[in-house]
Structure formats: C-alpha cells, structure tokens
Image 1 (cartoon, one colour):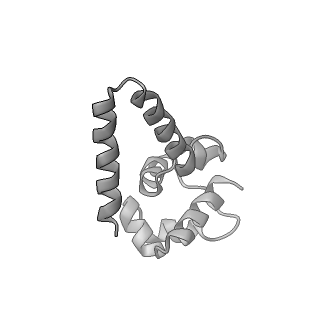
Image 2 (tube, helix red, strand yellow):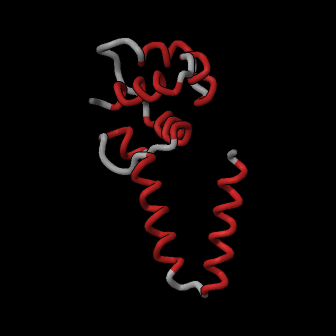
Image 3 (cartoon, rainbow, N blue to C red):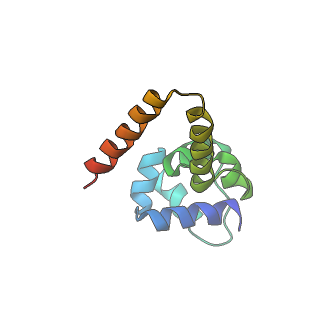
Length: 108
C-alpha cells in the first residue's frame, strides 16, 4: 500500500466526505478528488502533517507504512504509565486509581 492508498483508506474509514476532508486539511477539493483516482500522485509534503494530525497517525506511517499507528501510540502511553506508577506512593497510586474509576464512570 502506498501513501495515497493509506490516505484514501483513512478517509473512507473515517466517514468523511472528500469535501469535508479537503476542508479539514485546507486543500482544494479538486486536489483531494485527484488522490481518490487510481494512478494519481500522492499528496505533496505540504499536506502530510495536516493529514497525520487529522487522523492521529505519524507522518512516517503515512509515507512508508512503518512507524507509529494510533495503536502503537496507545501502547507507548500504557507502557509509560506503568513505569511512572512504580515511583508513586501508595496514597498517590490510590488517587490515580480513583481518578481512572471516575473517568470510566463518566462514560456510562
């Protein structure tokens, strides 16, 4: 899969229209429409950062398919949290646990 194909897949999975996507990354609609046609060029470097920010992926992943995807980034956060928690006191750990339970309760 190339850069253009990864971007088209992200847009389709997001449910955005081509027009909404173009507006979100401040690109002309005609430019974005071209990316959805096979055998067209990939987006220029000017659009890689806005696209990666919009979809929460790394520019490296957009360009090469390697690097950090949203799942990779979440794994890094969980790993970092597990390391940080070891340095906390029992009272601080309980505060964190209480906060996590509070955040989960807000979703219900």
